[in-house]
Amino acid sequence: MARPSLFTHRKFSELACLLESDGLAAGHLEILWHAAYESGDADLGSADALERTARWKGEPGKLAAAMVQSGFIDTCQANENHLLRHIVHDLYDHAPAYVQRRMEREQERRKRGITISEIRRDAGRKGGKRNELKQTEANENHLRSNGKQTAQLPHPTPAPNTPHSNTIPLASPTAKVSPKNTRKRDRKLSDEQNAARTGFIEWWTNSAWPKKTGAASYPFNGRDAAAVKKIMECSAIAWDIEKAKALARVFLSDDDRFTLQRGLPLWQLGDGLAHYLSVQARGGFGPWKQSLEKPRDPFDGSSRRYGTPEENRQAIEEARKTAKEFGMNQ
Image (cartoon, rainbow, N blue to C red):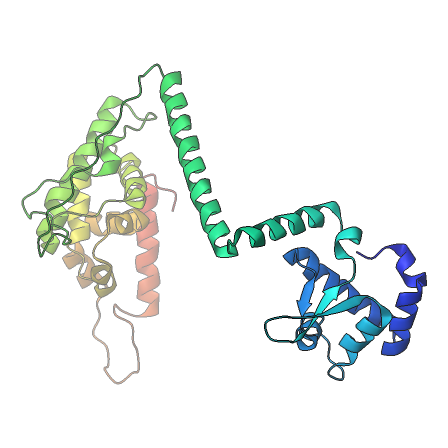
């Protein structure tokens, strides 16, 4: 940032007069100084490079000539291509301390013949080693605080270089899968309730659902775990695993195309618990659908599947009544 005395200096007055604007003079000076501060180099290059750096939009060559004439920029002849170089006047003397240190490092780098890419590469290597040492020290402190001795872990044996070494083995159709959620005991449940919950999940995962779909095992997840708890703790089931299995068989017999497209997920049984309890109370989907299905005129433009809207509303009311009898708040 320019010093307050800049705007009363004769150089600034001359530059503003040449550019016919105090704002242009102050703005372009700030941009040029900022670029020199960032690079740690007072050399701004040719006149075209100087004006590009300063974001000059006016007549080409006018800004560079005004800067040189007012004394803010010095010029020197380059040896290699005889181009006129433009240097910020006394940048080191007027720059902040951090810029002076940066300029000293830049001069040292040029004397040593090291490129900026090499400096950045070395800094990245040193930073990586430093982070590795910090992580190792943190691990040792953690093990030491737990009263354990640190041990050097063996390096993993590389996999054999076979044509199919990157393929993932498929699960065996006869393999029994124990869902991750069943290993974690729910502390809010008793031992009997946990046993019923675990038994139902394993039955669904390894027997009922694979038998219905032909898959190896059911992909049990957290949403299914919440559904199992909701099913088991309702008053119609009351943590009876056989009653839960009977209700699940009713759900698996549903031939609704949307349910089948979803893959008969267990969480859907939990979401539609009142509906499936009502179907079970009527004897399953066969009698339940017979009570709802009515013959209709194929040319009436109706797209409903079961009965009239009035009959469907009656069925919904009956389902709610059944759920209320079972003590479910739905």
